[in-house]
Length: 314
Image (cartoon, rainbow, N blue to C red; front, side, top):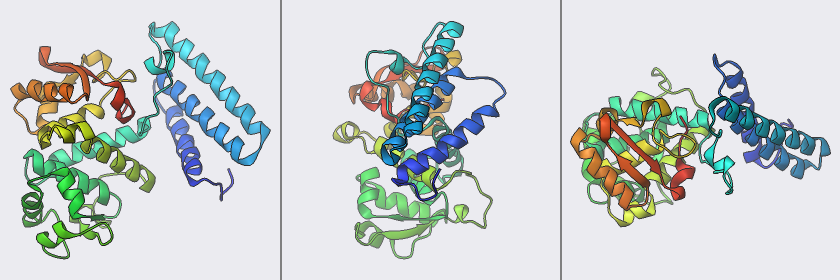
């Protein structure tokens, strides 16, 4: 691959694709659904590379990758009786997800980290801590504006930011009031001390993955239908949690689990277990979940078609 390949997004995708194939080769057990997805990504990337370079051999490689994806899906069907990806097997186009499977795994690592590292358990604190962690995950510092903060918490942002500062989880160069007044042309640079490079590193991903996960979380938390219904922090954390734990068809949790563990979802969102059903119902009303149930200690359900691109594959 040329070192100066343009566009840059293609170069990044090819690098990540190579890493993903190498990671797959190191797996102890085959995952034909994942392998088919990797071949499809390779086909798309090589077609774009061929368009950019005019190299016919790359187009041939794209065709080979398409055939490999189809063969792998057929093998998966023969073994399991179900398609490798319900979207790929349908009449509609394959879902273009914001996160690769590997990036989704990194996203879940961040969710787990924030659940244990946020200085207070309340959902509002955890939501802001999560969004700031994603911006500071690589260097321990990041930029934020008052509009960002009020977008995450419309009425309570200033109080929550002050809590994070008082707990020494967050460092600011000015007062909280000044941060709340900062605008996009002059954002505030903040520091999360626990994420500075001299501290033990909780994350292993690079800057591109950090940006992808941060953008994914922003799209989920800022979903227009949830904003319109003015859903609270606990409900939006549940939306983020469900999006991070899906199968290819949008169903929640691993097939063998029959959904998400209700107590784990409740703990992440700082909700009483018996209130998860109510908040899941709010997500159904907001067209985030197509359906939801909490039978048998599991949160079952499925993302709606409109938010499937936000789904992070298990």
